[in-house]
Image (spheres, rainbow, N blue to C red):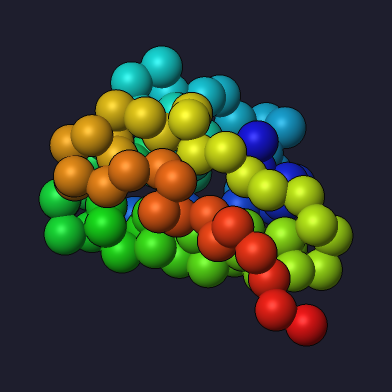
Length: 95
């Protein structure tokens, strides 16, 4: 699960509290409390960019905390853009 408590919307670029948001049942993303957008509202290209940034962020946290993000909550989006979730989380981190 996303470890951040404050999120930046990929659509309107405004910050919102995750605790005040709801999860989209389709894409698994948090709906922006400002514009109601989630990954469903992005183009396929934009979804790839958003997922790659999520993967970069989560892999950084893995380097710092040794805890992995599973990405299964975004299963439908990953299927749509043709990415396997095991490709998003690095198996090992070099020190």
